[in-house]
Image 1: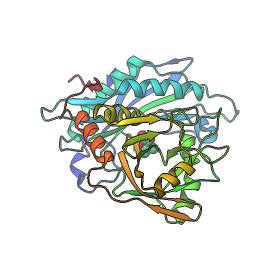
Image 2: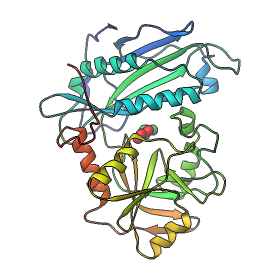
Image 3: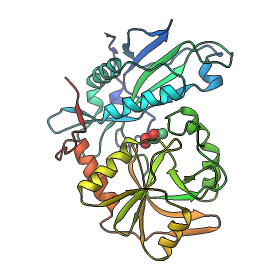
Length: 349
Ligand code: COI
């Protein structure tokens, strides 16, 4: 792979104590083009703007998918990824659904390895620190025909870590808009799934909430996700989370939460959860916690939820499952505790 190093670094201009999620980018990016029916040789080059024709396919038809991952540095300055194979497998599924040619596995892993090695100074080994990694693919042919693009671009960019949410969330259970429908692309990490969520989310924000709880598109009675994350509930001493389906993203953090909870001796149920059950468990005092989980936030505690005109406030717990599970996951990610499930992937330096 051809690597062109940047002649200067932006790192000294960054105040790492005040960065916000996804606003600062590192010095290099990985790039690979698909043309004439195959992926060309990938390169790493200094981070820079792209020049694209106004007719570029993605602007008009949104044939685009992405992944979210993080890299970590431990106390020996070793660098780690967390379950990258799961991200690659999901990228393949998203590609198929969006009719995008699958990016070769070897290019994906070599690209990540070389890019993270180059950007190692951007990762701190302070507890909770990471480098957010955004692989993405978009349709790049200059064409307005509403048919699949002929050319594609795969890029990986990196952004130094910052907390995604700074406080517990208040969420509104959506009963009109839908994020995904059966047979749709809800299980894919397709750019449009996120773009179409912004308007309903803005309506929830105007009602005084932070995020939406997505429900099924047919009855709006069954819980699916929250904001851009998977959702989980602690009912009594059990964790309950919806099963994945064609309307729910198969989140790597969700899978990790389920396994870590089991490793901690907490019972987990993957099953349908209806709004009526939540409200009745809340009223009988059994609904103890709600949290979102995703790569960016890891675990985002939810302190209250609204449904139609009612608002329900959860009591604050001292020893929450959300905190215990988050600490366990973060400790594995930063190589501070035993990796029972062999999730860590070492970057070769
Ligand atoms: C994640 O946390 O996994 C996400 O996809 C969040 C991202 C959209 C900012």
